[in-house]
Length: 356
Ligand SMILES: *Cc1c(COP(=O)(O)O)cnc(C)c1O
Image (tube, protein in one colour):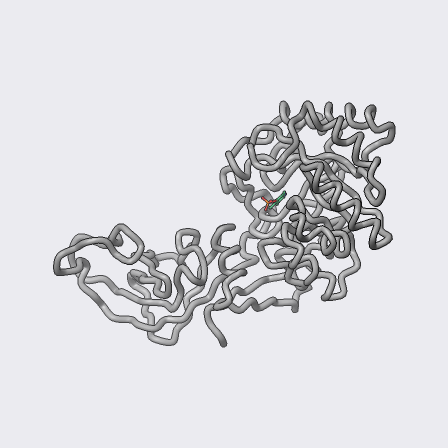
């Protein structure tokens, strides 16, 4: 089989989606499945939907277009504020988007009107993580203006924490979002249909709080795909962590001295690799590198250590394992490694559907 390849267990993705959907539902929280890490792969989208998510979100118009081209009819949301240069494509492919700028609202309204559509808007509020968001004291005023534009409907408000500065979503920030939801409703004179509490980093709060307030939706990618929460990369109860495996092929297997010889300066990517002090290393090279994934985010099999990496070579100490040229070695991936593998033109994605 071709290598490197990203093997995707769709049953594991569907299981994780179902598990989170079922645990959040009694708390009044629905789930939008976020497909951006996989370029909007239709198989993964199908697994998310079969797990009960209410719709899909992606940060790229191109990925949403791929989902629609695959025949998907479910609600789609653009979860990155639309580029002005892409508003026409945005309203064509997505029923809603997360927005932070008045000028983008103007452009979306014009584009939607031109296409005879009404586009739903979720205004994102800045609550301290310092990525996207309208200042809290401006959100009601901006919300009031949304529906002055033909072609737009205000669906709700949302926030995104933990992505840029690592700010932890907590009762304080979620209470503030709830208060803002009520302020916006008073300003606009109608109820909001969505108060979006955040990404996978908000799951711990959502499952443990005594009071979800007005939060009624989360946008979940990593937790469903990898079974982990992003704040401490802890495995979430009952979730599978084996949905994705990166398989690479061995191109050299030769015992090598523990230490290099000759004068030592920088290697291709800065610091020289860490190697044992003395003796011989059972060294193996697999055809995998920085052009395929983020090597720092790989988990090798038990008894195998990563000694170093370049654009195209991953150098391993395989310890007691008996490994030959042509063998394949499988790695687990963190979110960064997964995104890089899924977007590398050198890595083939293989979806397993049998168990679905
Ligand atoms: C990527 C992203 C998400 C999903 O984040 P995960 O940590 O993968 O759950 C949610 N919302 C926004 C705005 C995003 O950019």
